[in-house]
Image (cartoon, rainbow, N blue to C red; front, top):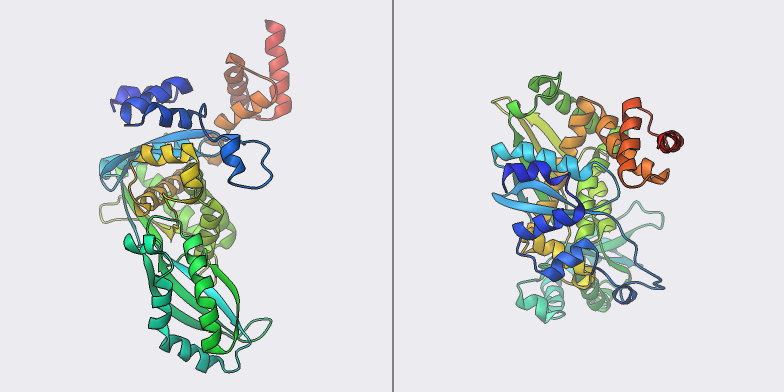
Length: 428
């Protein structure tokens, strides 16, 4: 990837960017067409995915560049509507390159399924009976999916909790730990729970009520860390030390205050969700797991951490649940999702999780850096201004002219865009 090509990438039209992607990847014409939208998800395919389909809704698909994850160059597809996210994640990845990029690791793909057991006369005794039947129950669960078992997946453990402080009184919860390999895992886990429910009722004398996986996938975490060399951090009138210390102070705010942490973690999810959506994974499940994990101590806090090492470099980490898959579900149906996975060169769900958490950390750094220096609005608004210009009726070259004038004036509003557009057309 010659540096001169990188510098020009943002200014290229979409068709030329796609040609660049083609030259840098092993994607065939069908995959490239799926990514471009010219041969993506059809109405017929969509009709088999959800109910009452009337069409297909499009979102922008961009590519974040410069990422090195575990020593490997990765082009990262991102789907979202918010401006500046792809550009800022790419720039943070570029800053990280001199120190080797991102180091990431994903846990084994173990999901947790829950069975709620009501009407138990003696909860402590029923709990022990379930634990005594552990081997029997796991053996039963292992028979459910022979294909998954042949790939090395299946049940891994069983836990039983007593819930006492509930609005309906005491009940039991059985946790089935289930390795789902390269799938997200909801269908496999829920099927296993249904299979076990009758035997659980026999053992406890209670009634198996809810049988559903949890999205608090605390056994399926992904972690990323990054070092940004101090000399990479200087920015305009800010010294490298000022930028570093400003980023750490901004993170400390989120670590201590849930009001700030909510927006801080939203910035992380800007990067995470964009890749999750690009690969047709369940972004609602990822969001739910992330925020529940952020509140696991009883107080909502930052998912990331930032500090400095002995050399004064900025160091950051991110740890969060990451239950994503590369087989089954919408990923198997959606052509662009399949192409996105191929573009990243992903061979396993854990590898996808490692890339996603790295992007989340990069986007978090971008937001903190902006907040600690120029303010979040400057870079964001310069891109947002183009959307406002289009909404006001600008097209072609007029989009940039209107946007640039609004940014100069620091007034990015649709009424001002309409006024500028009238003035330009009047001059013409």
